[in-house]
Length: 147
Image (cartoon, rainbow, N blue to C red; front, side, top):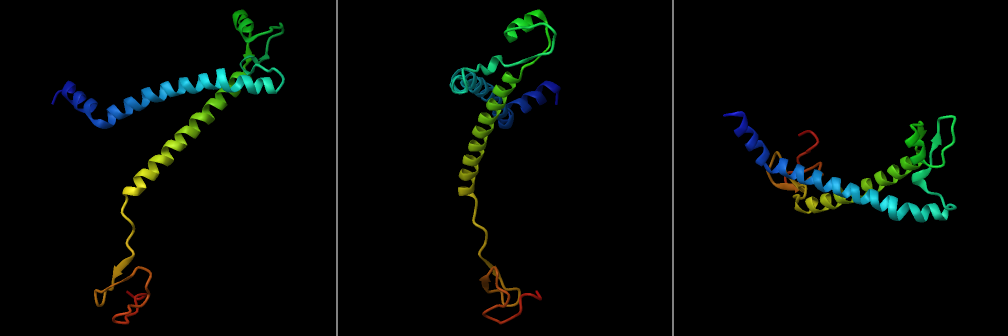
């Protein structure tokens, strides 16, 4: 089998296609969450905290003063952009919570299809069905702890 035919077989398998679709949808979802955080969620929070623009919070590590991150970056000054880091943390928490909900929903759906664990077992002496937790067979009175 040639490398190209092996690759085609690999690429056509459902798991690879599902992974690719999941990756693309995840990347798009990440962009939506980032926009939600930066454009919708953080501005009201910043306003409630005294008109703070989180995306422009930074520590200037150079000796010159800069009013914005854009000015500092244009001048090549080193900065610690903790406001953008806070935005990224909020992004992560929203995405992590969404993934948690999806996994929880998936587990609920797959749990419904799972067979229930057995409630009875066979007595090794008389072969009658007895409750799984029984320690003595009610039919032949054999001690099941020894079995």
